[in-house]
Amino acid sequence: MKLLIHSAKQVVTVSNKDVTFLSGQSMKSVDVLENNNGGVAVAVDSDGKIAAVGNTEYIRELWKDSDFEAVIDATGKCVLPGFVDAHTHPVWAGDRVHEFAMKLAGASYLEIHNSGGGIYFTVDSTVRCSAEGLYKTLKDRLMKMLEAGTTTVECKTGYGLETEAELLLLKVLQRAKEELPIEMSITYCGAHAVPRGRTPQEATEIIIRDQIPRIKTMMKQKVLCVENIDVFCENSVFDTEQSRRILQAGKEIGLRINFHGDELTAMKSAEMGAQLEATAISHLEEVSKKGIEAMAMSGTVAVLLPTTAYIMHLRPPPARQLIEAAVPVALGSDFNPNAHCLAMPTVMNLACVMLSMSMPEALIAATLNAAASLGRGSTHGAIQKGRVGDLIIINADKWEHIIYQLGSHNHLIDFVVKNGKIVHRSIN
Ligand SMILES: N=CN[C@@H](CCC(=O)O)C(=O)O
Ligand SMILES: [Zn+2]
Image 1 (tube, rainbow, N blue to C red):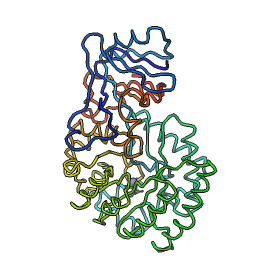
Image 2: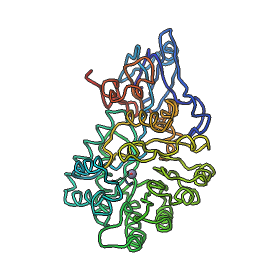
Image 3: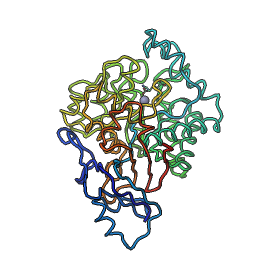
Image 4: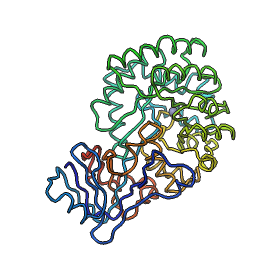
């Protein structure tokens, strides 16, 4: 056996039922195991899968003839599933501190973007950087995410735009996927902006005729493992029809559809995504009532990103309406040069305060539902027999502290475990 965690005050299983996501009323509470007589234990088998969860005494008895590679005494502490960050842009060079200052002075995101800043500024610094340089900063960011409790993360390209630059970013992500202890779901986001000197229509054709076939070949050769396709469906970026064509072409090579929609402008992205049976749509600040209904019908996960509204003073996405309509809601950090946030505990706090989500809703959105947005709803995001042994242990006697104590996650998280292996131990 790989790991035994025993004597915990609480083990937050998230759900004890055989579910792949939670929506509507079922997001109202999380399942928690508590036992005042010896505490609760979790055992992880040699494959890194959860073997059993229950009272410490019972688990000890079950495995009394087994050796554990590691044993953690979690007396007085809480065990939760590792967080799943459903939306990040982690591979780029430089920073955008100067634009943060511009936004504080009143400039809008699209004003900066349309005047050649924003994504374009980061594309310039990214294409000037070596693959090794990009890998180093990527690794640093992913390891910080892991320390903040994220054990699975969605990772987009999108700061290359032209074919060779996008393929290079995919390769840098692939290297990280193979070398680092955090699990990655790679997303091709070549349609993140229209490359300078091209029209959206030209860029759409290049993506469909050149980039997607190149990715298909590299996936066949097993050089790349890409899971999702993304596009920034937005006014003056890719319109809804162009986005539809790009997403459809990605779907045809086996990628899951997971894209930026209805963020700054009501684009009917949600309606279009639901028609394509998108796995997930992110942002949705401007989603329509019909779009919400369509997503509920298609079972598309809404990936909400509270950092965006926070940084850009936008109207927050309608989390309450989405939950009431039974759309599965997930959360992501949206880590990118515009929103420099690596920590899901911070995101959950923002979701509660800005999006009026409850703490159980935020936790479900940052674990099981985020896993569902990445096609991992039956294997990740909950502590159940047979699921991956991705766990965090916090030094608090109620799990809610990880959300409530804004900015304190580094002091709260004692251990991060990936596939039953301790990958981070705090020095607190
Ligand atoms: N909206 C588009 N993409 C990113 C921002 C990327 C950037 O500004 O560099 C987002 O999700 O917020
Ligand atoms: Zn994004």
